[in-house]
Amino acid sequence: MLSLTISASVFLLVGYYFWYLGRHNDVSFDIRMGERCYSCKEKIPNWNLDFLDKEYLEMCTCCKRDESLDKVIGIKKKTLLNKVKKYLVSNRSRKLTSGLLIALVVFLIVDIISVLFLKMSWPSYVNNLINISFWSVMLYKQRLTTIKKIKLPPPTIV
Image (cartoon, rainbow, N blue to C red):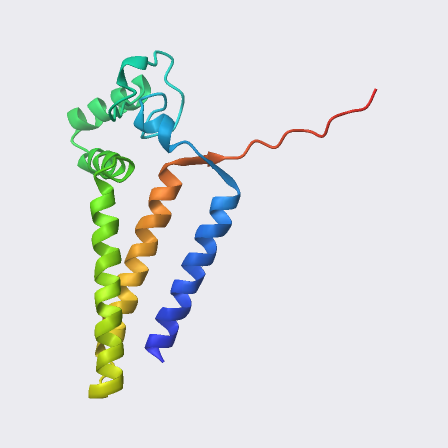
């Protein structure tokens, strides 16, 4: 029963991921090139074209000010959250998602072998938890790199 509940939650996460993907525009390239702030996704006015060959993550002045104030006051939660955001937006987070995907495939193979030959079902729980963590990371990463689509009014015929 627990495995069925976890599997159903995975389907809900995947469905929400694709529903969310259809209603938002991807700005990950703009964020990686420094045109948008990786924390609040606002446009940064002084965009430099010298960084087209490499990743250049930048924060806007408001977010920099907020982070420096948080460091002075002693609030480390927002600073840590900004570091997590920067990691997930960067290309380095592909190692995390690739590792979770490889672990998912390995545990799926172990699950199939254990159910067919050994009559054990415990690896399915591990597989489902890795599946949930993979889709949760992907969903959070998608939320960090998208903005809501702008609905344009229909054209008027004169």
